[in-house]
Length: 265
Image 1: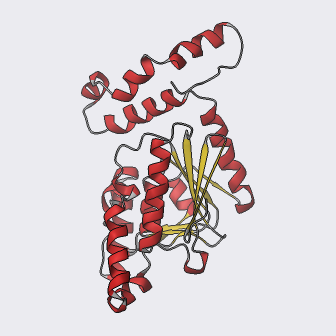
Image 2 (image 1 turned 180 degrees about the vertical axis):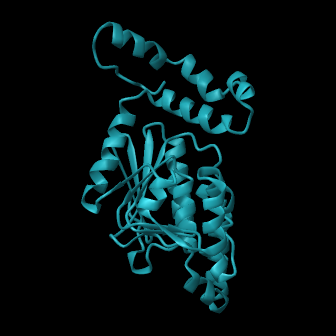
Image 3 (image 1 turned 30 degrees about the vertical axis):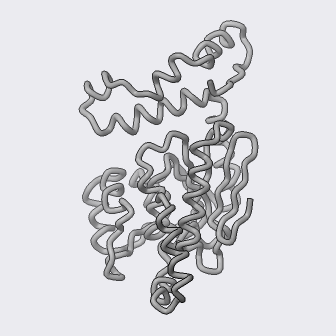
């Protein structure tokens, strides 16, 4: 499904979400934010989708953040257009605010991931980047802050001193530097980006979907608690997995020396 600012495709349990404003470096205007939110809603509610990949159109930019040119002209728009943007904003749930998104998200970073673009990537579970990609939160250089949780996620995903160095200067980091800091999983040549992501996708699909969701829930939600409390806590996703048909299928397939047939239930 193509929209004005995104492409959304589902193939073999995998959703591909493409930010499709290459003429504006896939920057975020109200319509793109809203359409991305709609696609993520579909990923969450559709049991036939087991994981999703987010990427940007073209080879120059994953997402360059907020469309500041759009912000500059907002005041000049018609009242009707302003009402439309307000309604879209009301319906939009930012990826950064989906604290317990149950399914795996992979960011396939094919260029600049700046500001809100990096915040989208930070909200994903796995980040694979082309070697020419650059990352940064330059908002203070525009009188802003990385308010879509970037100021909170970056210091949690890399060490504090490097995080503060980038947050307080607005500097960019190369893909290799991001890899060295543990921010991303792999750096590959641009020509190998898609195949590398596909290898992660295929490995995830070999796993039981409910086990994947339970693993993600336990790992991510457990970070909010001390170790013992995290271990002892009940997670609804794990309860669902434990009582599922797939929990029986895995050991049975192993005993019968065959590949498991996951149902997601």
